[in-house]
Amino acid sequence: MILITGGAGYIGSHTVVNFINAGYEVIVFDNLSTGHIETIETLKQIGNVTFEKGDLKNINDIDEVFSKYKIDAIIHFAAYSLVGESVVNPAKYYRNNVFGTLNLLETMVVHNVKKIVFSSTCATYGEPKYVPIDESHPQNPINPYGNSKLTVEKMLGDFDTAYGLKSIILRYFNVAGCDSQNRIGEWHEPETHLIPNIMKSVFDKGQKFKIFGDDYNTPDGTCIRDYVNVEDLAQAHRLAYEYLCRTDKSDVFNLGTENGNSVKQVFDECEKAINKSIDVEIVERRQGDPAVLYSNSAKAESVLGWTPKKSIRDSINTAFEWTKKQYNV
Ligand code: UDP
Image (tube, rainbow, N blue to C red; front, side, top):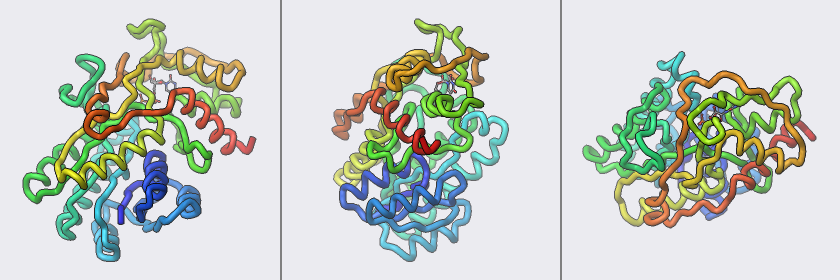
């Protein structure tokens, strides 16, 4: 059985769907602090999913799950992921993301479970020294969120050395889009991400869409990011797990499309996709946003056989369908 922590959240739930579609039995472990019980109910309708409510900060919660089921591997998403919040409340990030993961790893050792796929981030690289960013780019995070993820990456290396616990670290770029059958989607409260914020502004007149800065050193002045579709990303997790089973070797991969899109380009694409003009306002830069980030994902392609199949338009279309559902339109 595969234990997916954070499986009630955005990327976690799409990965649950990918694993159950491939015939795996999945247990979701989630404290529902940012994940949703409604998502769990939908996942149970899709396939063979067991839900265990619990908190990684409480080692007994994890130990109970490992004692109850025969777990082969962990896909570990459970974490807080808001950069701005991490700056003002670092303890929350170290307690949940680092201490919670330490509890998980210690429990894995006790129960002799030796495989984990870890959800990391391009935020561990910090301000890019060059683009596209490959896996050997220096890691100098510029916020506590990135620090917490990098700390876990280091812990994973140490647990491999000490106990032979094998990990695949996946460093994502910007994740976008929703389930192509519109059953689950991106559901953050509050929502901070680009595409869902554009979509929300279409249905909620109180939520005028704001571009954070158009004076960056980029062709149109807005930040450039690499938007990878969530279903493609979910597929990468399964390929990573199967690779780990085949090789029993720890490794690390970037996951992105290798294409940069500016905020203005994404906005224009959204207007085209919904065939409507959307109100927009240019405001101050958001703190901590590098001008340009995009990935070199050649390693994931050559080693895992992973290639992103969906375009940014696919992500926008599915995000639009999901937002309509949320607003009952
Ligand atoms: N962004 C924006 N308005 C929004 C949300 C995001 O202009 O309402 C910009 C943000 O400044 C960044 C890009 O869109 O340049 C992607 O931001 P997002 O929060 O989606 O992802 P991040 O890059 O922070 O992981």
